[in-house]
Image (cartoon, rainbow, N blue to C red; front, top):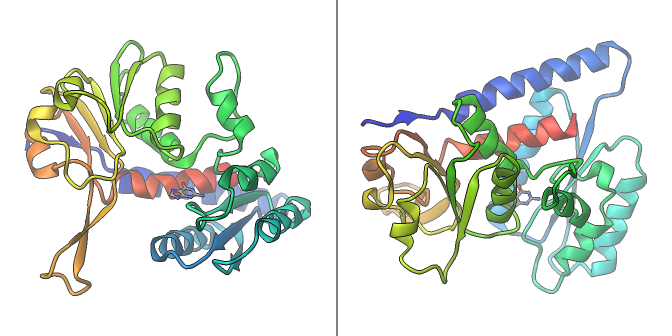
Length: 284
Ligand code: GUN
């Protein structure tokens, strides 16, 4: 292995401790505990796991969490009605509507309903819009993209003038992380399913962020020697040798790419823990 491992678990643990200390200080000063509301609609198993992890992390940091679940056939009015109640609830400082929502619900309208002061996920169109504009500041930045930048900063990776390539243009990761990189003066290329000759584009990257949801797609010859690689992908692949029948893997072929990259953040165990830490930080 030639690449330095970016230890997202350790960096996230450190941030979570810092957040817990901030909460303890606030409570000692007589302020109420910060509160996070999670809204889960339907029965997506992955979403259930993520929400449970977020609630557990809240409890550990001293943040009150309020869990709300609605059935998969909840109406648009019911979901928006719940968000409106949470907007008005003083115990709640942050509202997280876990995505994706079941088909048939209008995600944009739901996100638009969240009070931007409580939009700890940073997905409200105003917060995203500010991210896309020069000289404007979002109240909150989406947690996974913020986690990627936090890791790069922790590792002292220069972004000013760097060639950054983002694989994927999702609303949750690809696009906001590209916008954050632009704000940091990187020269950013966003790749997607129609990009021609992907490996030749990724080989130009000083910083490569993979967020496409394709297991181990990024190979050794896609990466410039010495590049910094952040793997955001979390993919389930069949694995009969495991008790649960599958294993989780990233978008990057770690075993190959670690031989050429300068630094690498693996998945699982890299950006995932950072997402939760950033959520707690945003809530506080
Ligand atoms: N689905 C996948 N990632 C996220 C996230 O960071 N926030 C929410 N709300 N939903 C998600």
